[in-house]
Amino acid sequence: MTVYDLFLAPFADYGFMRRALVACICLGLGSGPIGVFLMLRRMSLMGDAMSHAVLPGAAIGYLIAGSLSLTAMGLGGLVAGLSVALLSGLVSRATVLQEDASFASFYLTSLALGVLIVSLRGSNIDLLHVLFGTILAIDAPALYQIGAITTVTLLALAIIYRPLVMECFDPGFLRAVGGRGPLYHFLFLLLVVLNLVASFQALGTLMAVGLMMLPAAVAQLWSRSLPVMMAIATGTATAAGYIGLIASYHLEFASGPTIIITASLIYGFSILFAPSGLARRFFPRPHLRG
Image (tube, rainbow, N blue to C red):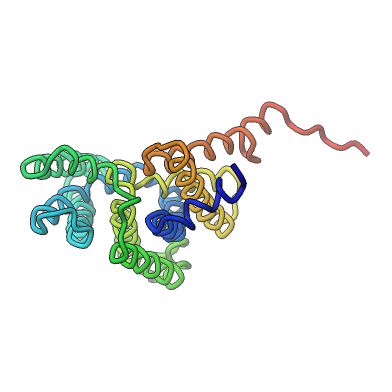
């Protein structure tokens, strides 16, 4: 088997592989930076909760459309995810519950409700598609939707980058200078939900957050500069998508899980050999002596 057959032939020969690769690139460009901000805000597990929260909306869109319509499911997931985010914030402000407890309660309810809705009308195969995604079945309209979400994400991050960074590291200072912290927090949650909807179409609700958090964790191990972390996260997500698609094609594995496993392997390598990894801690370089 030549290098061309191994790394390029699947994309040259099959349109569904090309569409899947473009989807992975778009998801990496959008989800990578969002994952870095989630990690910096200590909202990693909340991102996972929100990825499950889109399920009932997607299930309702599935019932209305009568098939696995990614547009209907995406719109339903967007409404459901934003509803859970807003309700969790309201409950945490009106009661003694912390925001993470509110998210956990709402996302468990949403997950159970979504599975129940899909199981009432759909088959087990449909349920598997909703939970684990169908990245190889992405068509042109779904690809346009993912690309549009990525474009909106990058433009929005460029516009609110400075206040968002300030809101992450020193929200007290942002309030002192008259900044509208809650507004930027809501806009950030909107971007999170949008990217989860895009990832949901490719990777399903159970793994949608994978291309957000694993590359972000890799980036933190390799750098402490925020722009560099965002670039590393984007590159890691894109590389995991490409390598995962190649591995799933040749090994005949499911594509979505293979992509996440690839990102996990990169994360494991980084744990060992990154500047903040275990190898540097247990085998430090000797100091130079004059």
